Every structure is written in C-alpha cells, then in structure tokens.
Image (tube, rainbow, N blue to C red; front, top):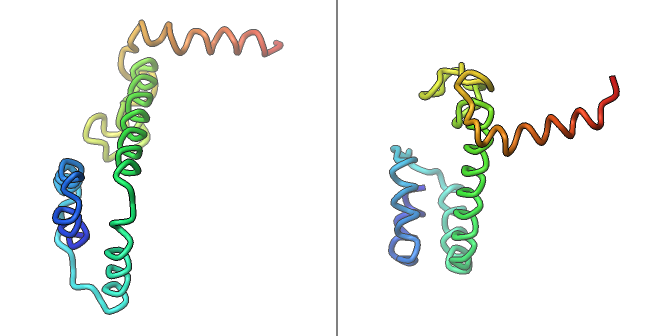
Length: 126
C-alpha cells in the first residue's frame, strides 16, 4: 500500500493532505509482495490517474458527514461516539458506552429522541 501512497504523492499532489492523514492512521510495515500482487499494483498505477479528484473529495465529505451524524446521535443517547458500547477494545469506553451510559445531551435528546418517541407512541397500539 505504501507504494500506492508514494505514487499518489508524486503524481497527485492535490491529494497530499488526505494521503498524509491516511499514512498517520494506517502506517505499518508491508511485507514483500508476490508476483501476483505486483501485477495488481501495476494495474492500479495505470488506472489511478483516471480517478477524478472530486471522487476523493466526495468520499471525504461523506465520511465527515457520517461521523457528524453518528456523533450527534450518540450524544443524544448518551452513548460512546466511537462504538455505541459495542466494542470491548474501544479506547474511549471499553465497550461500556451503550445508550444511557453517559448523560445524554439534552438539546440533542429533544431534537432527535423525543420526536421519535412521540411518533412511536402514535403508531403503537397498546
């Protein structure tokens, strides 16, 4: 993977900030690749310049938007914004941050949860 990142750094300087961020998150040693992997890498090199920059920007924007929505929902429920309490290895909550573990953000609770409860009550017959 490092070869691809290095190639992109040289050939797509407009992607530099994203590549640096990626490297800091995913830096690791790579083992020598076998012949099949090298052929695959060559195909990637040949095709990578055909990918418009806006596709990378669109993906970054979508990820940022999903993170925003996830955090908003987690805070409204008083849950861990990293795993919602579903990951025992979570560095923030050690898997304890299920909804209600933290004090919910009252404004987000009113905005997101209360309307859902009202709608639920209207549609459910006891």
